[in-house]
Amino acid sequence: MKETYINYVAQITDRSVSQFLATVQNELQEGADKITVLISSPGGMVRDGISAYNYLKGIPAEVTTHNYGQTDSIAIVIFCAGSKRYCSPNARFLIHGIGFDAQPNQRFDERALRERLREIENERVTISKIISENSTRSLKEIEEEMFQGVVWNPQEAMKYGLVHEIREQLFEKGAKVINVLEH
Image 1 (cartoon, rainbow, N blue to C red):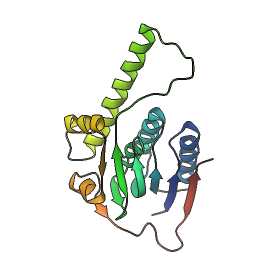
Image 2: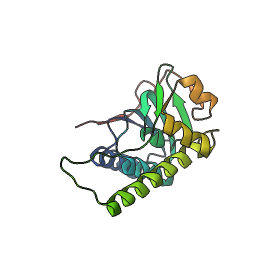
Image 3: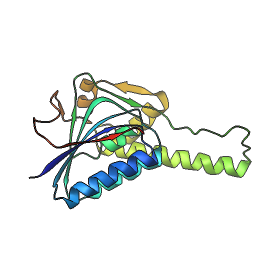
C-alpha cells in the first residue's frame, strides 16, 4: 500500500482547498492508495470545506484523518472524510453557527437577505448532517451545538464517535509528508 501524508495547516479557503485537492490528485496519479490528512485548521469558508469533504469521500483511496491541533468549524467536515479518524491528546474541536461578513456600505434588500438566510440554513443543515453521519450525535444535537457553540476535547470527541482513537504519533520515520500551508 502506497501511503501519503498531507499536512493541512491552513484556513479553509478556495486557494488552500484548491492546493490541497491538487496535491491529493497528484498523489493519486502517482499511485497512492492511502491518503492521511493531518489537520490543524481554524476553519473558514463553508462551501470550500464541503467541496473538500465530498472530494475526499469520492476518491479511489483510503482516507484517514488526524487532528493534531485545532480542527474548528468547517475543518471538522474535512476531518469527517476519514474512514479512520485520529486525534492527538491535546487537540480540540470547535463547533459553532454560521454567519457571513458584509462589505462596508453594502446594502441588502429583503430578497437578498432572505436568499442569504436560506443559504446559511442550507449550510447549517449540510454541516450538521455530515457531522451526525460521522459521529453518534443526532442531527438535532449537532444543530443545537452549532447554535450554542461547543468545544470538544479528544475524550469527548471519542465518546461521541467522531474520533476512533487518541494517538500522539502522526507518521513513521521516512514517511512522505506534503505541506499545505497558508499563503
